[in-house]
Amino acid sequence: MNINLMGSFSLNLILDLKEMFLYQFMRNAFEAGTLIAIVAGLVGYFVILRRLSFAGHALSHIGFAGAAGAALLSLNPLVGLISFTISGGFFMALLGKKAISRDVQIGIVLAFMLGLGVLFINLYKGYATEAYSLLFGQILGISFSSVKITFWASIFIILLLALFFRQLLFTTLDEEVAEAKGVSLLRLNLVMMFLIAIAVSISVQIVGVLLIFSLLVTPPAIAQRLTSSPVKGMFLAAVIGLLATWLGLFIGYYSPYPVSFFITSIVFSFYILVRIYQKYF
Amino acid sequence: MKNEIVISAKNLVSGYKDKVVWEDASFEVRAGEFIVLLGPNGAGKTTLFKLILGLIKPQAGLIEVFGKIPSKGSSSISYFPQKRLIDNDLKLNCIEYVKLVLSGNKLGFSLPKVAKQEEKIALEALKMVDGLKFANKPLSQLSGGEQQKIFLAQAIVQRPKILLLDEPLANLDIKREGELIELIKSVSKKNNMTVILIAHDVNPLLPVIDRIIYIANKKVASGLPSEIITSKKLTELYGSNVEVLKSQSGRIAVLGMEGGTNHEH
Image 1 (spheres, each protein chain N blue to C red):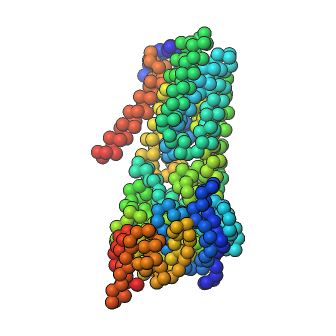
Image 2 (image 1 turned 45 degrees about the horizontal axis):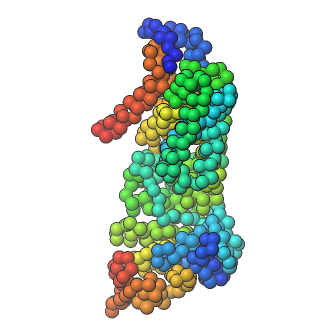
Image 3 (image 1 turned 90 degrees about the vertical axis):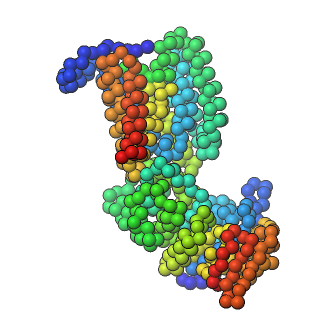
């Protein structure tokens, strides 16, 4: 399903933006999109460094089952999403880093949770709409209450990340030395999985369960290739995600196609361009 | 202070759950000593490092570092782990790795003034290992020998009193191996650091070591190189035929361990 108003594009950017922001749903989309792009970029930087892409992907599927279950119980899907991803994240962290990198086992749990989500969606009457927005994102349908939840979740993530930034970096780059210097690996694993769980939960609103990588993985993967400082890398990842989200929303407003398609295509094109540039120039 | 006892073990038993890795270990390590820790794979050499670092507790017996039960997080002991996976796509600069040890265990961000000081200390450590030129180069783009230098800078950045080096010579060619040993020796001597280094090939280390601690057949023992580097002792230690040859000029070569190169001793 697409929400598509297809505003008329006038080549006068300021006028176009003014017209676009007349709509509450576009304001909601830009506000939530901005927050999510920043948070996904910052957290995603560590997802890449710690090689947790697949675990992040799995968490989004676990969240799908939670969101579908919440919808079935007439609760806000975001609540189901967050509670399932956090529980799944903590479970993974408690199993340890080796367990997190076990692709086969994670894949098996992922498939089961997706299946569970399909059952919940099937039992829920609003099948098509809900399933579509959970799987592929539906930023233009974001409500103001979801924007508020996203805002507070984002502030919380940024503060938590700032607090544990150095310990996360230390345990990511040099785990054994970090442990010898007194950093608790379990605590940092829990913090990391908690951060991913929240970032995944709020990102699902924009790009959906299946396209989660476009905000959580691709922008930091580009940033990692462009800078040699962790702080700069995190900010660059956030900026890339932000530009892609804004541009995707802008194009999406004027076209009949889904915003998540534009966001994924923009970050993908950027990634390919960077790879080509680094290889040949 | 030279000759001060920095590590002492009494009837130490180490293991995991029901399995004893080694037992009845009693030895002392003195300040400024350069010790090589020998033993076959799986003998429990890294386990001994973990005990010294306070990462694991002994099953029985007593280990003391600077007269106290070791606890993790000490800035007086540095650990140089055996294997580190460096992602080739990662462009992080060498100085970032050195700085990790200075502030990586803290919460929040360093204040600008503190960050500047940390940068200065990290650069000094890189200078000590002749690695200043690599400070702003990505670690992943350095050769194996150069990377080990950066990790050595990381290990000494807090000016620890004890350096625990777990196979720093692995995968280095003979020239780089020699260079790294010289570097470890000179840096530790200048700063009166005690070095315990795990190695499989004792040959390149013979000119610099004061003592050998060895683990074999679940026992830990120590002795002077002249006592340990004998055909009989090493064959017993490794459970396979090892020959020690001594030329008229005093050169010693150990055959049957890894390598087998000659060194003055």
